Image (cartoon, rainbow, N blue to C red; front, side, top):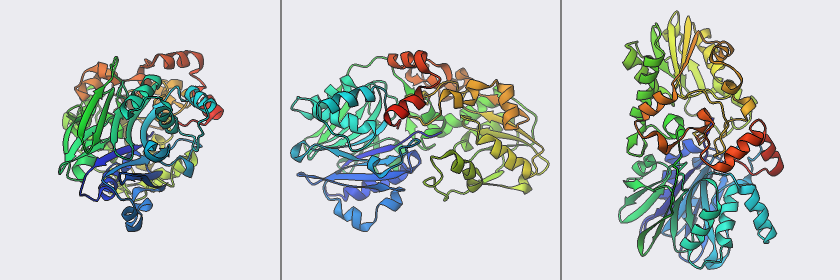
Length: 473
Ligand code: SF4
C-alpha cells in the first residue's frame, strides 16, 4: 500500500535553490520512488528537469547547475497501475511566458474526469494522464487576473485531495485542499521560505518549522514576503495513514511526532490483543516504533528478527504485483539465531490485499519461529480509497472479503489482532473529527464519493481507470 508523491517549494534568495530542493526531496523519497523533478524560475522563465527514477538517479551536478533562480518546486512521484510513464513526471508546466506555471501535486481529484472533458472542449490539450494536469489547466483557464484568484477559482471547482506547490515566473504558492487530506507545512531558511509535504524535509536542509499550511489555505511567497489566503472549510479529513505508515516517524503533523504515535499504536495492540510469546518484533521500518510500543506495554522482550535490505530501492519492484511478491524476499532477511524455537509477536502497519503478510510469516517460520502472532496497527481495511492511495479495489481488499479468523488462516498466523478504530484514535491523541477513516468505516468525506460508493463500490476503481486512465495519485 502506498501513498504517493512528496512536494517541495523553496524561496531562497542567494542560495543554490535547486540543490536545496534536491535535498528536501531526498528526505521525502519514501513518498514516491518512480520519478523526480524540479522546476525553478529565474524571474523571467521556468526551467524544468524531471525524469523517471529516484532523486539520486534523476539529478547530477550538470542538471542541478542548469536549474538557476531563487525559487523552485520539486516533486517525487509514486504511480499506480498502468500509469508508469515518462509523460507523467512532475513538475508539469502549463501556459506560456509570464502566464506559465509549474505544478507539483500530492493527492487525487475525484471529479477530474468531468473537468478533463470540460477543459478539452474549451481547447486545452493534455500531455499526461494525470489529474495534476487537470488542476494546472483549470487554474490557467480562469479569467481572473491575479494568481491567487485563479487558484481560488480552481479550488471552488475541484473535489478531492490536493496538497500543491505551484511556481510562476515570480511567485511560489503552497495550496492545501479544504479537507486537508494530505499534509503540507511551512518553514523558514535563512530569510527564505520552505514548503514541504513533511517536516522531516525541513530538518534535513536546516530549515525551521513554522506551522502547518491549513486546510483550504493558499500561501503566496514572493519578493514581497509571505501572504496567506483562506477559503472556508467544513469537514476535515486528514488521512489517518499518514500517522500509521506514510509519513516518516521523525515527521510532526498537527503537533504530534509520529514516532510516539506509532509506539502508542503498539501499546494499544498489546492491551487489545495480549498473547503469551517470547519476543516482539516490528516489521522494519514502518512498524518498528509500534513493535517497541507492544514490547513496552506487554513486557515481552523486543528483538530484531528481520533485517531489511534498505538499499534495494522500490523503483523496479513497483507497481506490478508479481514483482512486488518477489520484493518481500529482496527486502527482508530473517535471523534464524533470533527466531528459532520462539513464539513471535509480529507487529505490522496494515494488511491490504493480504499478499505480503503470508510471505513474511513464511520467512519467519522457515527461520525456525515456533508460533507467529500478528498484530496490525490499522483496523481492517474494508473500503477502497478515492483519495489517491494505491490500495486496491474492494474485491481485492482481504478484510472486505474475509472475517478476521479467515484472514488469520489465509496468512498462516497463529493469531491475528487488529487495533480498533477507537484504539487508533487514542494512540494518535488528536480529535477524531479531523481525520478521514473512510477505508475502515466507509464514511467518505466527499458526498460524490458516497454516491460513487453506492453505485459502484465493487468495480469503480477498475472501471474508472479503464475508462479514463486518470490515475489516482
Ligand atoms: S480512505 Fe483511508 S487511505 Fe484513503 S485518505 Fe481516507 S484514511 Fe487515507
